[in-house]
Length: 236
Image (cartoon, rainbow, N blue to C red; front, side, top):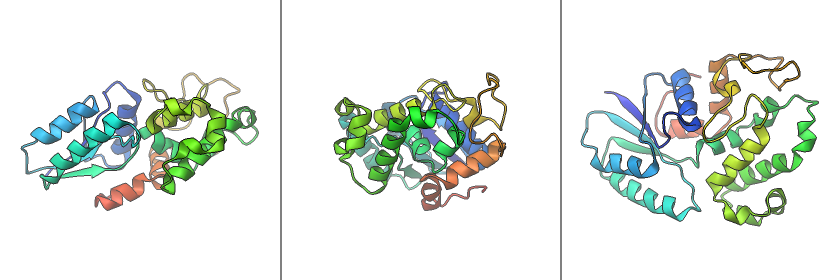
């Protein structure tokens, strides 16, 4: 029996590259497949006829995006009819990186001036993650998040997570946009081709191999619990 991981991210986007790297290091036996977008992902589950193999579906749970909520209801209905389809519950890959315990310690050296210049972003990240982890969905009412971006009402949780992550990582080897994920997330230390002499991050002394990075991300985020709930063995 084969196991597939179906995601909505296109192959050339940062989300796909993250999952490709993560699964390749920790669960190389699982076959990653892109369904291009959430609608196509829902359709693929609906039309699935294979009963021999197992399918793990990653559908971004942007709980305050009405279109996503409607698509997710359909997905759950179609998946409930198939014994070989299981759903992972994550907001988006950007949120996974945002909630990573060691995020700030990896991005910045202890004396990095960004720790001061990006204080609002750092605080907004802390408050958002804490709110989501505690089940508090009215994160837009949190003073520090409003202080970070007064137009927060124009964002859903996936968009806000991506925005905060970009603001924290921009101009570093960890920079994340929808179209690009920094080399420091997907390569061993230090293989960042564009690194300058003054580009020093929190990993400068430890120099982790890629597999160790993926292990740390798994252990320091909700992904470990997700995999355990699915009965997946992760090579930690």
